[in-house]
Length: 223
Picture 1: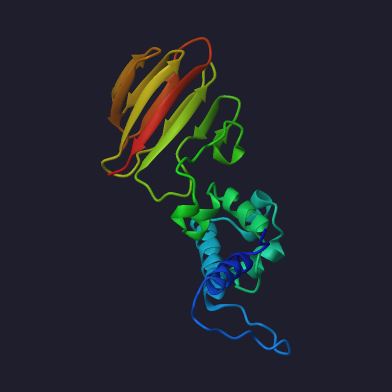
Picture 2: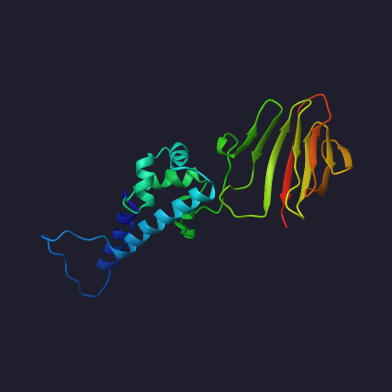
């Protein structure tokens, strides 16, 4: 099994050569083989891709190192296009960004069509305290105008928000408990199975109005 992205590409080129009718010559043993142009392009692309994804999340190299388990120095070399990482290292970086290997390399054919966010993945825990826990249910790596959350509110807990961008609306469905939804001067009490939509470009809140835990699913749509 090839260890690096370059090796994977080189194996493909050698296979094509063996099955080609076009004459070719072997490189001289006395001369070191230079990396193929496509392999160099992959390394350049990976360095730029990792840096752009990290910057978009406002992550430091240290933060990405902690999320991926890849050393800070190795990540720095990858971003500077000075390293040829193994497939295992590349996969760990992809997983830190909640991506498959194909997505990170932007090779759609190598990516699974199913993207899963695991319940115990703390990278998606947007907020967690005694009164309120928010888990992001939409991929973190997408540039999007829709966001999907699970919100858990303990008794007496509330999620209060300042006005979002103009035209933003929120859609909520109550899974458990009883909540009170406020949007500017308007308010409604909701029970399990109830759904509502309201303006989120004004001050708004979701308040646990019951005696036990409340769980709601929340969608933000930005226009």
